[in-house]
Amino acid sequence: MSDTPDRASSINYGLEGLTSRRARQILLASIKKDPAGDLRIEDTPAMKNYRQLNPEFRFAAFYPATGALLPGSSSELANYFKDQINQLHIIGSMFHILNDPNPRSRGYIRVANTRFGMLGTIVYGAQFHWDDIAYQVYANFNLINIVSYLPLLVVLSVVALIVMTNGLRPLRSAASMVAEIDLDTISRSIPLDHLPKEVTPFVEAVNGAFKRVTDGIARERRFVANSAHELRTPIAILRSRIERMEPGELKREIKRDTKRIQTILDQLLVLAQIEARGDSQALGAINLSELAKNVAADYSPIALDLGKSIEFKGPDEPVFAEGIRWAMESVLTNLIENAVRAEPAGGTVIVGLSKDAAVEVVDHGEGVSIADRERIFEPFWRKSENAPGTGLGLAITKECRFRRRRPSVTG
Image 1 (cartoon, rainbow, N blue to C red):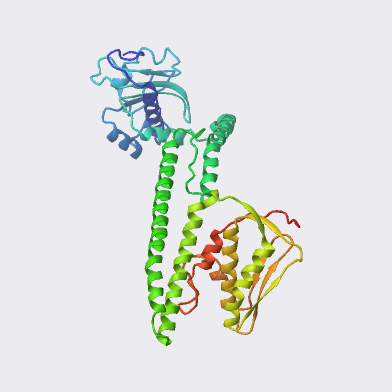
Image 2 (cartoon, helix red, strand yellow):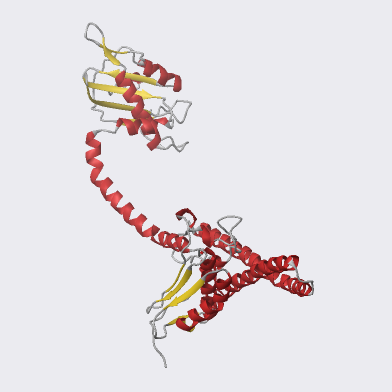
């Protein structure tokens, strides 16, 4: 027998220690008093299960003062300690029997106070199983251990919180950038600086996905722009041939349908122009008073033909804003066109301009339901199939952006 590890093998004493402590607890739980008040080791269900799991398991229990064994003990195992049992106070020692053919076998002997008083226990031959760890966690989960380790747990929790907070700050910043990306800013990429190396591959994959989506959108926009541009020539030829037709109802209907097709193409080209120019367009001073009056005046004959009118309301002095003139003109044209279509017969569309450069186009139609207020800006969306228009006017209006400047008076 030896209290030192076998030199022929390398054994993890930490794991074997967990096994020996569990075996000792099972042994202590198997010690019972008989009717006469004497102690003995019984083959309890827990002991039977443990012996089936560990066929080489042996055990013994003894009285330290006399060295007498409890009935049910392995006398063969106790004989290794027969000259020491009543001579030493064995606090606890791990051992291996030298002539044991299993070099991994370990045992544990200890004398300690139990519910039956001072008893010595010897266990040997139990092999490590992973559930030994779970057993020890459960066995040591008591109030004394919790109180003992609570300060350490608090310190470790605070340290972990600080480390996690600082470590995830770059990731939260990247998440905020992703949340701000839309179709107008999808070409942006998330910077990889200061990101944890563990998430760098994921962020690179997200940037790659954005790049592929950007390329796909660009291809679709080029296709729409090129298609609309190519269709302008055959439509111009068609309109020229229609003009040579004999006057009549058929000619008027064909001209109206051709005009509708022409309008759709023109608006598609405007959308493509907005998307192609993006935010790189140069801003300039716009006289909103003049622009709004001119657009309202240009559309007034169309409104009169429909039995409606347009009225302009604004300050006497010019109102200026910084923006893109053609975009603002497109916005006003589409808003007024939509308002004239919605205005009841005999009504008046109001085009208003305030001193702080806010433009307002008001009609007196039935309005738009709350459920449809977001959809009205989708290309080709119309309230019903019978509704007039192409469904592109408000989509163009939404895409056209300009920045307001403090009003000023010139001349």
